[in-house]
Image (cartoon, rainbow, N blue to C red):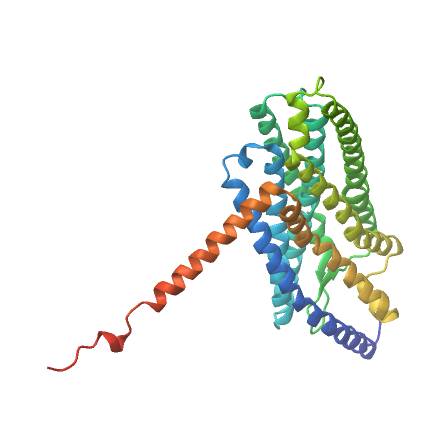
Length: 352
């Protein structure tokens, strides 16, 4: 039965009122989005400009993750502007689908990069002889990065169909399809981008942690016995940078698990039940806002990841600090030179 026109207008009005509240909240995405752009940009620049870090597969993968988080930050800095202006519905719908595709693609690349990093650390620490040649290992992981982006580009294509603009005055962007493809896609995405990566990273880092603990005990006992102390033992004990990097990656993995499970639980639940954000708005404002918070927490990983890397990885932290110092000095010098420029009045010579 066709819905009466009045009911349609009432529904559209209710949706618009609630989404206008969400629209205001979306504008605050600008702050974390710009933070993500600055921090991930600094990490990406520091790695590619470093002669040492640019030769290491781990930091190539970290730069790739930072690059994907850059795309996420850029997209979410654009999204509030798109929803704030009264664009024609067709234009808003095209922009919504494009932004959804870019967000999905960059987010997938970031997760797959995290898995590749954990695998690289596992090989470097537990299987160092498997890929003894650094040049060969770097070449392999460069190919892995290409594969990561190919998978992300292809796997995100259904988002162009599944997402779109909700008709109304707000031009809100959301998942709008309710067919079987929506259910199958988000169930597969949950398994492929949450459960499988989380299990893989947990296995790799658990093995790394157990190895480092066992190695530390052996090194400690050898250090106490001068007859058994070796250069290798001393170098392992003094290798704080390796331990700090592994610690940072483990924390990033735990953060990924904590901050992304609400979104995947929400997406899978809505896909299986056949409801969408419009149904939640009509039935429960609490669940509607909870879904918005779940999506927001997932976006915040692009801010948390670089903060953790800068804080816990000494190589990245030192280089980002130096980059910040150079930028700060450049701004100060520019301000000083601007203040020392002669004004128009000072250039005038007194009449003789």
